[in-house]
Structures are given as C-alpha cells and as structure tokens.
View 1: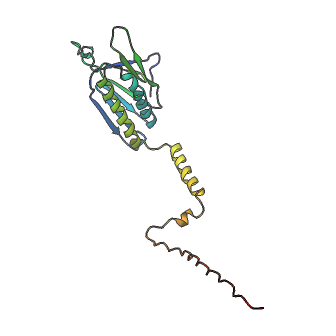
View 2 (view 1 turned 30 degrees about the vertical axis):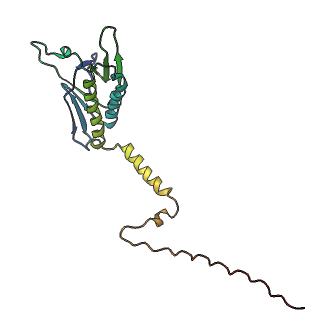
View 3 (view 1 turned 120 degrees about the vertical axis):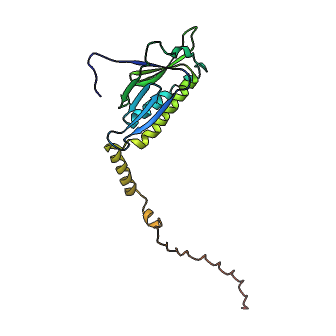
Length: 207
C-alpha cells in the first residue's frame, strides 16, 4: 500500500446508536482476496486472516469497558451539517496494524470508548453503537477463514503434521483399522480354561 511522503491522515468516525453494517467477501481463494467491513460511511478492506483476527480482538477487548457507556447516546453529535455532504472514508489493512480500545471519562461528560484500527478511530458513544459494530467485525473474522487461501508456511506446517502423524502412529494401528468395503476377519478367542476336578481322598490300605 502506497504512502504519501510527509503526510498522515487520521480519521475519527463518531458512532451513536445502532450502526448500519455490511460484511462481504471479495475474490475468495485468490491472491487478491479481501473481506470488507462497512460501518455507515466508513469502509475497511481486510487483506489477510491475521488482520481480521486482530481487529476482532481489538473490539472484544473493549467489551468490559463498554459497559460504562450510556445506554443511549446524544444524537446531536452526529446531526447533518448544513451545506456539507457527508464524507466517507476507505482504508485497506494488512499485516495486523495497531488496534486497541481506550475508555475516556471526563467529569461532567458521558463516557466515550475510543476504538483505534490503524488510522481510523471510532468514537463510540453508547451500547448499541458498540455492539452492532462488534458484531460486524466478528462476522468478518469468521468469513476470513473461508476467504483467504493458506500461506505456503501454513501448507508446509499442515503437510509436516500429516507426515508426523503417519510416522509416529502406534504399531499395528493401521492394521487394526477396518478398511471401507472389506469385511474384517473375526479374531478367535481362546476358550476359557475348564476347572480341574477336585482331588479324591486316598483310600487307606491295610499293612
């Protein structure tokens, strides 16, 4: 991903109330695979499974703190501005950029939860905003497992695990395993030993 020299764009997205979200897969199983997460006017393209897991964990790390948020936020914070078209933001993310949660408490003001994903900061104001967005990133993490092909390192590890399983299998394990479509031979069991007859008392003989 390209970067403009001498410039860093940081975006704040204020969330109040339940959010309109969308999670989609793009070109699954290819080198250009991606999972997109849209939260209102913000759109994030995730390019690997590790990043999807990083963002999901970041939102989950804020679950306990989010309990201190107001149940309902102040809608005036997100009212349209006269003469201004609502801006939108798009970010591409890979290689697990920094992400985390931070609660802000100021005397005389409602609590706010700051969720940072790379260059985008989500200013979360209430329970509904938090949980609706958390659900979207959880869906993205689940979808990523199906969208992104395994890396060469992952394929090598899986092959090594299968080889080790065959090499270190207990002796006779394969022979004991029934083969599909072929009846297994019955194993003869030795008959139980018959009890010996009780000894009879000796007959006395006259000398």
